[in-house]
Length: 67
Image (cartoon, rainbow, N blue to C red; front, side, top):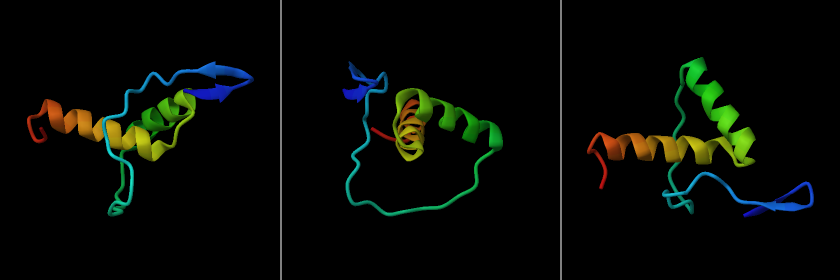
């Protein structure tokens, strides 16, 4: 939960990815994908990197690439 405009608001995104000291990677994404990530990050008031991590995790999990 976080404070937004004086009221408490709960994030809709249920985080699954551990976010501590991790390796960094840089890559280029399609502009449409960046737009979706940016939109969700703005709506949820969280960093774009969190949205990208969660989206990649969910996609890989659905593909059977992660437990």
